[in-house]
Length: 435
Ligand SMILES: Cc1cc2nc3c(=O)[nH]c(=O)nc-3n(C[C@H](O)[C@H](O)[C@H](O)COP(=O)(O)OP(=O)(O)OC[C@H]3O[C@@H](n4cnc5c(N)ncnc54)[C@H](O)[C@@H]3O)c2cc1C
Image (cartoon, rainbow, N blue to C red):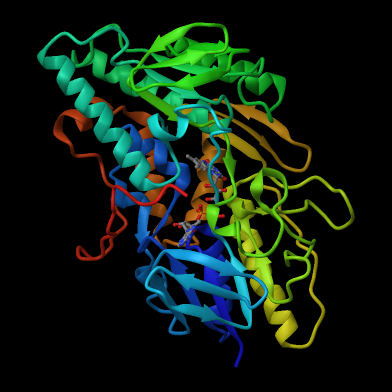
């Protein structure tokens, strides 16, 4: 009987384990968290639009009707590709016929002094919840007594999709809090990027749309400027400015996770694993890498560009690697990964988004792009939830009405009506390892 180990319960790992389990492969999925986390909705958690539990689905629930899949909640402290093994933090070492590495990414601080210690990365629900609580404490403090200049300002580092989306969500939260008389005038969101425009991978039209929307919402864009150092109470910018702040959000880049370091295969661009067109790791039979942890080629052949770190790439590559494992067990050859491109998109606020969809990268913005965003993300969620209608209904309400200020004051975000059993809750530890 064929056995498989899957490291990571994100979109890639879940898709791989579901496909393997359904085909009768004895599969063990290991994740340090007891839940799958849906990263595209982390901003909504950080800005009080959704409770953390709504974007963290217990892995045991996802695999409840998959008897062939065992879920282990453990930190993997070492991996060895040569013998397809994972060593867990309880000292056990597991091996299998196939090892699917789906361990995601980790923040890349590029050695900037103070960045690892004093910034808030946004990779997990724990990160998002930590940021929400930190900001809420600052706002509460400001309501009781005057605070020093910049104490309520937030500096977002990185103007890619993550930085733009979180800045847009924060700008809306700030506006809502101000309208409710809960935030003094001086609280500002600054978005800093070394490049000349936000949303680097998008078209010029999308970049201009995002620039205009952010500026209209009060975000202060500092383009062509880098961050040289981060301190507990200010950041140093490359133009010599010192921006006072107690909240720096790191959206400045990601790299492969630390567990790859001694696994045996050299890492490629971004500290990620280079994979062959069929998603296997060269030189290590039975080892596959999928999702954010991998540099996934966009097609067969040498030197082709790699695909971006996106939910649909993760989900599709996870499923594809599993299908290739099944092909090998049937004695067939593997197939090169064929990505069904869903386009690229970014949601800048409740009614504002940009999207480039279809083979010809048709550009849309505003409510049409918001609808495209919803469709693509509902599809991603359908891999872990049976009630995507509940997500869509929450999303349209979010689109229509701003609940942020009410939510902040009552600590009761509007829930997505997933219909899960009440005891079916994830255990969210606010201090998980960052790498
Ligand atoms: C803030 C944010 C917003 C995003 N927004 C979008 C969006 O709108 N649309 C989109 O398509 N994409 C978006 N993305 C990208 C998308 O979320 C990722 O590409 C995708 O989720 C990656 O899935 P994955 O399974 O490869 O990795 P992950 O989802 O990161 O899963 C990796 C899993 O591995 C586990 N793990 C790692 N190391 C260990 C270890 N040593 N031991 C045990 N467990 C371990 C982790 O706990 C985690 O559960 C966003 C990403 C972020 C960070």
